[in-house]
Image (cartoon, rainbow, N blue to C red; front, side):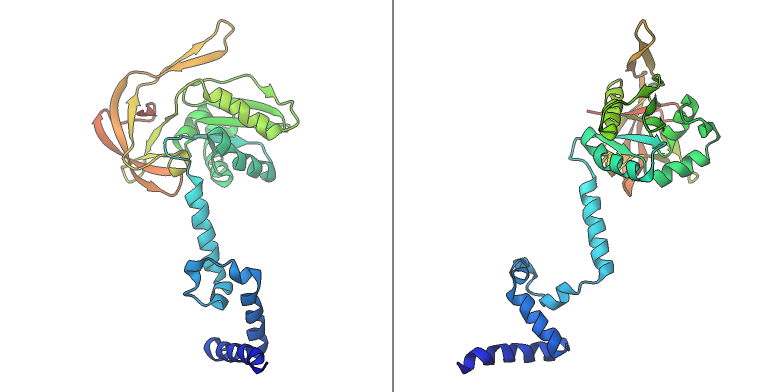
Length: 279
């Protein structure tokens, strides 16, 4: 009978001496150790006292969560996501749209980054213009510019093909998924294509990276401007890339949306060239 009371007493004493905690804290720690939460701790963590794990540094926990999110942000190997600039949505709806975009092989240009680019680009006083699409294709790397007005009227401009579709009115009950389906359909007109720019350090950059599925040493073919094909009613139906004139490969990746480009052969890309990933 005595031993039943002796063991908790010894544990309490050890906790007080080793962790410099109060008797009340020690009793709470014993309760945690005996609880289901204590047994759910992974086996490879037992080398660290559980009271230290439970008091994890908030900054460290936040960094770990960020690392986990970054690791899961990139698409599976071989999958490419097309970058899309979407304007005219509330912050809440934009956030929901960005979360669902990966399921459609799309990546939304971050809201703050896009707003800054639009504010510093005179051509984007009208975000539905092809001039604005051309500018945003260089940086922050939007293949499509999508302008939403009145919550459901959508205009889509494709910087790769130069196609612009008439304003479409969303009608479904789930406007976000309907919008993503519309962009995905427009995306079928041409292969994944991007434009390069030269930074003020003289190096070539691409406003795409891990978030799009790019990896170091991937090769892209440099194409001259392509040709947009229209149906008899004027509707854009296809895009043919121009002649291949060179090759580049992905160098360093910075964050999730930026990469350096290294010349491999032929013509180095200018603002009017399209870069298409070799398959």
